Amino acid sequence: MVERPRDEAGRARNPRPRDRFGRPLPVGSVGVPRIPDDLNLLPQQTLSYAQQLLDDGLAFNAHEVLEAAWKNGPFAERMLWQGLAQYAVGLTHIQRDNPKGARTLLTRAVTRLRAYAPDPGTPLPYGIDSAGLIAHAETLLAALERGTPIPADRLMPHLRIR
Image (cartoon, rainbow, N blue to C red; front, side, top):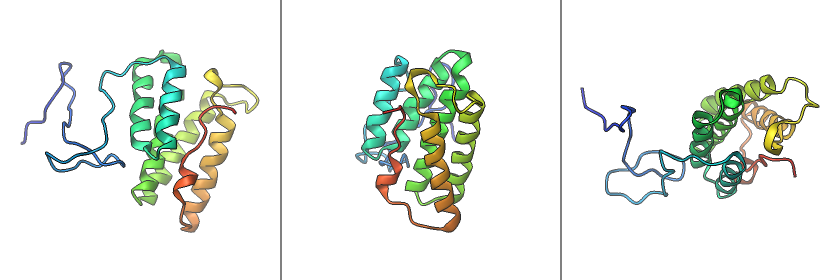
């Protein structure tokens, strides 16, 4: 068995560079800048940073930012941040032309967002646009079911109410 690099907490880490869709590149290649493993931002900063990455077509990196909030944030908000991170991974799977993975992750994201705020009229913290994100995900899921191509500009949802 090949020994994987690990951080001080024993979690596996892959030091290889990655392409804009999060796929590992050969050692020595130039990839997109990585999100630091120890990223710990305030919720509004997390949302702004993730939005910037989504707007730049870097859904995988947005996922890493949102995942950091899920892992570092309060337990009571875990499902919310997990749903947002899974949403970004669903977008990543669309970018990678993996419709099955996209359907799985977008469905999980919608489930978590709905579970976090089961009443559609209940606002989510930090101005997160749950209703807009769920509607957007459902549109993407329908396009995936039909096998309709999804242009890159449809993979830039707004995380917060505008």
